[in-house]
Amino acid sequence: MENKKIWLSSPHMGGGEMKYIQQAFDENWIAPLGPNVNGFEHDLESFLDEEVYVAVLSSGTAAIHLSLVLLDVKPGDFVICQSLTFSASANPIVYMGATPIFVDSEKDTWNLCPKAVEEAILYGIAQGKKPKAIIAVSLYGMPYQVDEINALSKRYDIPVIEDSAEALGSTYKNRKCGTFGDLCVLSFNGNKIITTSGGGALILKDPAFKKKAVFLSTQAKDDAPHYEHTNIGYNYRMSNICAGVGRGQMEVLADRVAQRRANHERYKLLFANQPHFSLHQEPSSDYFSNHWLSIVTVSENSRISADEIRKMAQKQNIETRPIWKPMHLQPIFNDTLYFGGHYAEQCFKTGLCLPSGSNLTDQDFEKIEQLFSKIFTLS
Image (cartoon, rainbow, N blue to C red; front, side, top):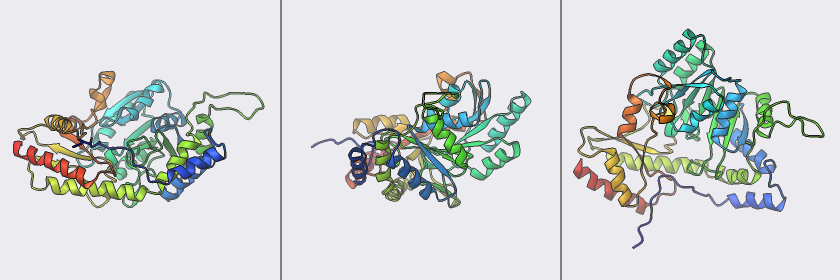
């Protein structure tokens, strides 16, 4: 019998993507402009349902980088960033020659700890360098503490870059992630809730900012008959073909959110009444997570660790992964400023990402449940 691999989060096509791709080929719109680019941006703007302006780009990383460019971040500037995140949240800070200040997570959402953020702000002010931006991540689809972070942003006049790369379809107080920051970022990488193969989006509140973002993302070519450049530009625009995939994916976004949330409900039943296992979930009804990935933490009192579970799953051809290793623990950032306690480190030590794709089958879940039935006897 074939031992089919159960992936952590694999691409899930909806069936409508090819009509947009075929249209691009039929009309020879193959470049990083065209009807699909415009249409995908419009689809996202309609979904977000607020007065926002979307520029689709080659990646979420590119969107964070352009956000920092638009905020005029300079070499030596401080930028606050959540430590418990993927490196793409932080790397663009270094692209700019700026200095990241990493902060700990709070226990409810695992996102920016407001107390640690304020400590980092006050440190920067004391050094004569008020931070130029706060990068706020909605980790694994869970919205951050929006009210608290936005209050700090307003109090100290520091813009927020909302990194909702993992949170398309999530909401906080019935408002969609991707609308809370001064600038907001989405990702459409192959493992995300919807995909364009590779891609991202920058969401802006000002049409002039969108115009500038598109200008910079297409090599900053000035309006001249020859190639004239008065700004440094980037090759960051999404192709019309990839945007066609995105248009097809938008048709099934609501289903993908529902499917991932159904996965989470199934895990909730699996871990019920298991004292050594805790499923990460919304702290209150204000939060609605897309549950891009479902995460379980394993008690330190358990006789089996998260990493031992990962190895057992690997032997069964089931992909699980440790949660993101905090940035302040990464070798490349080992001398970087950090504020807060040790909660992010604790999450990394005890957390495990579970298979969460919207294309998981009942048979896949039966195999996962059989594995954990054995694990429970060892815990």
